[in-house]
Length: 265
View (cartoon, rainbow, N blue to C red):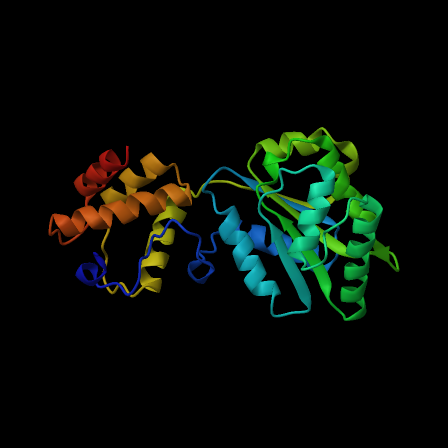
């Protein structure tokens, strides 16, 4: 609705993560590097945590984009709140394998055979467990750890990446055997003020902005409200552009941001 008015080619602040508009703040770049390192060096398990909206999904999608051009098969399990048997079935279905059986032994054999075939073909297998903090059963975490027993020539046949909100840290800390298997950990923090400014400029330029749209005092206002959390920044900026369009403003100033914030409450 407001794109033509502001001279933009597409929405700059969508609330759905877009790996094509990935602002590599120092911490997001480090998070991505650590995931890539964990996979390329077969560290077994990596863990990425952060508050809602800090960019975990964006990092994971950027990771998939980077890794997919190499010899990796990457799958994502987005609803891991399952008991151990259903977890194995869900993994097999993600891999396109037959998950019909009431025998855990048979299911695990099918999974190991698939991982073995991948290894024979020169493919490294990566399983991303998104929203891992929702796993409530200790046995499910233990089942994930047991997947690391699937090895070939002293190398893991699968690399697990656990992604979740801060409660995941406490859950993992309480399970020493799994905690000790995690080779790489990283916790995403909100953006600071400087990187919030850079984040706005980056996203606007990527969609064709040829002039400054947000004033400095408007950025300070949205930073104070968002606390530097990218998802909140996106929501406020998107609404501010809409409000500015409706008010026929030349720029988004502090008062427009304040109105957008009130509109979001």
